[in-house]
Length: 355
Image (cartoon, rainbow, N blue to C red):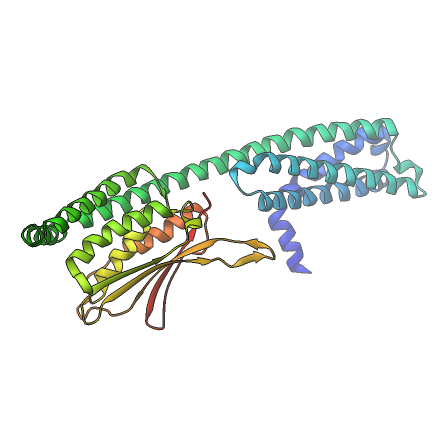
């Protein structure tokens, strides 16, 4: 018994403080001077309207919480406003009418206010509810807009950090030194391959420099980029590394965070042994998502997988890439990003966004 009372006090203390004075004024307007003629009149006339006035805000709170849950996105504000105002009106008018007709059914005629007073105050109450709820929803919209702006700023910052990290990793002396060594040997041994290598290297840098212009990229663009990036790796490691892509064209227009695939391929190369005797296989393939409810497909997913053959001396890692991807999906509000190790395989699951 104590817990429900504590819950009511904690969540509805504003109503508990504000409603009684409001009810006293309401009853005086309904009953006139007879309201203060005696303590008996005061108590008997106050109680039913006090009960109704406490019940009404509780119902309005339920309507508000339901509308915020059902229409939580910023762009759904028209539906939320219509749902909320309609619900507030039904609850407020319904409680007042129920109390009025309940008093008519009692044998105490002095408790029944005149129809003129009742419907006049009912109209006034409805107008007040309309004004207050409109202001309330305006404040809610502003708060959600401000939160959306903050999340957008965070997402842009993370996107820039990702672009910087990827560009930095490609511009580090080791990468340039290795690329120039490969290019130098190819020029004398196989000029045609050297030309292809330069073309793919330019494609990689062009895509990296363009990636800061967008937070999301299509799966098709990301796959084309990762093939260029892998061409550089393949030229260097030859039979020590393999790439298998199995993604239907129907997924090419879906989207993922920019540079996601390059981050994951680079992560696999960085942490695993690469040799012709034990080549590192990296797989990228599509996978249908789980169903939220019957007949409704939640998301499609892209899986990046490599077998675990960790280096004896592990390189230092701050896990910026994986953490960055996780945070970007969180800010996009897309569930399903996973990192897991199973049966000697390392997998990262990327949910695909609809175009």
